[in-house]
Length: 313
Image 1: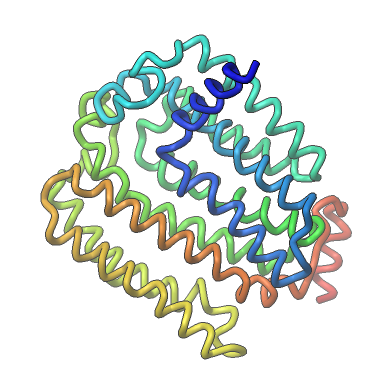
Image 2 (image 1 turned 120 degrees about the vertical axis):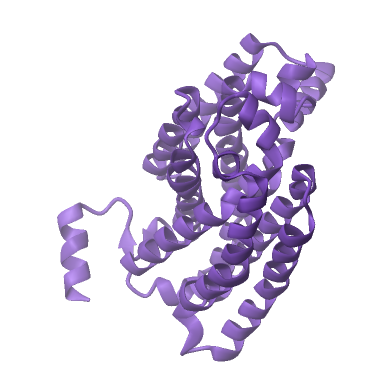
């Protein structure tokens, strides 16, 4: 039994390790940051968010790896299926278990709609929608970011959130989807082989680097200033400036790497740096979330009551 559990833990780690920074860590950080600012992290909340983060990650990554076996053989041969550690059937079994458990745990924590939304977006990978750059970066990734934030706030604030919070998260999710095109630079070889139409494939390596030098050097800092820290810019100027300053080194480093690194494989680290910047944004919710949650709406409140409450405010 112990050897079976050890083997299964090893398989789960190998399934998830490529996306731990982007999929599992942000949800946990969001919960801790927001609950620390609004109330206080609880033992039950911490256990719930750890389990939800794991299942959020597994629900997607098992589908992703089932849909991308040939591509992973080129871009990520270390993954469990192309390396022969598990069979396709074994991955299917784990995918079913993970998605069923994710929906069940979400229902027990009052966030089943957000779990179902993430599963719906993930199914797009099985249907090969991810071959189109618009779906992957402007539907799937923003949906994942949105679900991460909504999971964190619902567990941290007893299912309560505001219209202002939803609007802010929607904008931030769209922004991250734009910047996340950087991840496709590292996978050009596999994407071409699979006829995937990413911007990196359509524009070519050189043009993609130039475009995203502008995105990360000009567009990204602008969004940080006028969207991410905007809720506290007037009320807590010093903290807003500090958060903005924390982002600046990432913008500079990513822009430099895009300018200097001409090999697609070099941009694996570039994407990792971008993910680190996203994690910094998640941690900064300790300061930003309270200003966005002044008008609270229960997640299970009827829609007509929610609208009436918003009008009243």
